[in-house]
Structures are given as C-alpha cells and as structure tokens.
Length: 190
Image 1: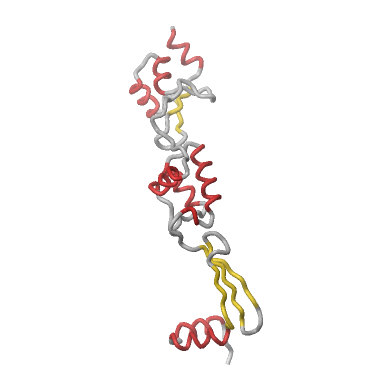
Image 2: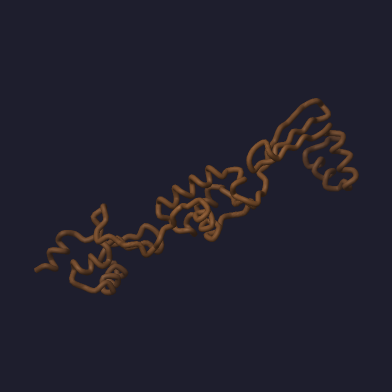
C-alpha cells in the first residue's frame, strides 16, 4: 500500500484522541517550554524520538503592551504614522496592513490606537488645527483662495466640485489645497 500526505491527514483526522496521543508519543520524546526567554513569546523545544531537536517560538497573548513581543517596533511605527498626521482610523488601517497585531493578537481599531497614543505620549492629529493661508507647494487654503478671488468659501467649494478650480486633499477630512494661477488672482484685481 502506498501512503501519501493525504492518507496521513485522513489517518490523523479519523484517529481518536487516545490514538493521537499514542502517535505523538511514538514521534516525540519530550518538549521543553519557556515563557520568559523572549518578551511576549513562548519558546519551546521538541526532542524527537529520532534524536533530532527543533526549536520554535510562538507569539503569545499578553495582558499589557509592556510585554508585547514587538513593543518597540509597534511604538516606533505608531510614532512615525502620527508624525505624518494620520488619523486613528488611518493608523489602524496601516498597522493592520503591515501585519501588526494587538496584545491579544487581534486587528487594530481606532480606539486601540488612541489608547496606545495616550499610553506612550504620542500626540494625535487634530483635524481642527490652524490651517495656513498658503502651503509650501504654493496652494492656498479655501478661505485665502476665496478672499483672493473675491467670492465666498461656499462659492469656491461649488466651483471646485464642478471642476472649475483645481484642489486636492491629502486624506479624507484634511484641509483642501486650492491651486490658483497668478493669472486667476490678477483677473480678480482688475
């Protein structure tokens, strides 16, 4: 009879708990487990009946981020994302995309991001921070652009929406950057 990987899986799945324990005893001599070798990880060594030895680590669930397996990396990345003025939902999304996990090995939420910011004294991005009249790229704030064109901010937004004026936004909820040419500004002054 020829055994394949699938027949081994079938044998394992169809075996009783007692038979599985017996199979494991035939393969493994003993296992050594240490919780404190690496922060946030469980280290274990399997001594096989053949004399081979294999070592493994497993990230464990922890009750406090002080014991998180990747605390320093997580703290540094959170700080970098906050410096980019990302919001809590945006930071949670990036951390999840990059494979970071919470202390309970779950995905990040905006609430957890804000808790960690407070814990590690990482400033958060305030959407209502003072908007400059003009940015380094030469674009204008909505209020300044409206003032230069002699129209209301509401009217300016309507023109942007209709495509008559060019504007961009770094992310949802951020300030609009309105692009005006010198000709547009000069035309108003006439």
